Length: 298
Image 1 (cartoon, rainbow, N blue to C red):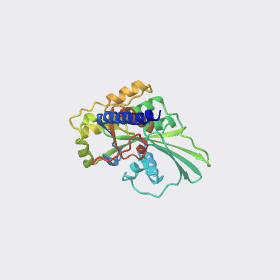
Image 2 (image 1 turned 120 degrees about the horizontal axis):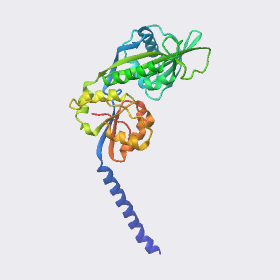
Image 3 (image 1 turned 90 degrees about the horizontal axis):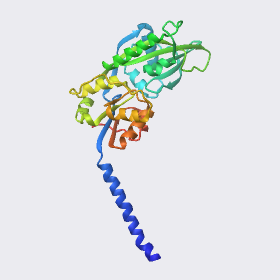
Image 4 (image 1 turned 180 degrees about the vertical axis):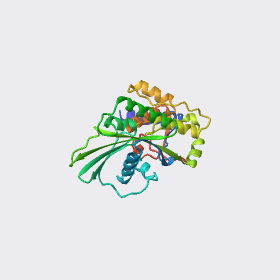
């Protein structure tokens, strides 16, 4: 019996070694796929292009949002600090920051005897918390809501990042939930691109690169057309389905996956890993949680 075990152990080890080699060869044979988050990579800073709504109120709230720095180096904080807004006295004391699903935030600010809840972010994460229109007295109509959603989609396809802004005041230290806010309008931001990053991206095969980002899909399509000028941009839209097979089909076919939460980005990377040798290029701190650790593109 001992002699049999003596011969079986090397055989078992040899089988395990062969399986490991075959698995390694299988992984090595996968074609490369690069997943890129352009935010904080190809985009080095932003500037205000246009206000859609009451300009004075929108500008004041945007300045307040910049002054109320959460010191978290979040995507929104980095974006706001890059804006060349006129400095002014801080309008209140920042009490708390609450991240929204994409790049937005809810900032709770003490302003005199009142508490200000300021929402700023993508229209898809701000508008669901809105109840009132700009004057704060009438309800936001479905027509105006739809109109601003269309404007935001069109603006992103023309290379702008639309940020929606809403606010709410309460008295005392009440818990302010992200609902029943008053909608102010949109701020359209123009990206200032980093030429060095664009040149490095052009060294990659464009059919082996997908943009996976918190940014809107329209803006990502516009960016791809800037990187690879031979690529025709046709106004790509995001996937609205939650059905796994339909979502995976969309991930496979589309060169851009926009307005993607961390959960969706994680799922997309896991899906691509089955068939591709994935690399993630990202300056988004959240992407450190992805199955593939982000690296830099040299």
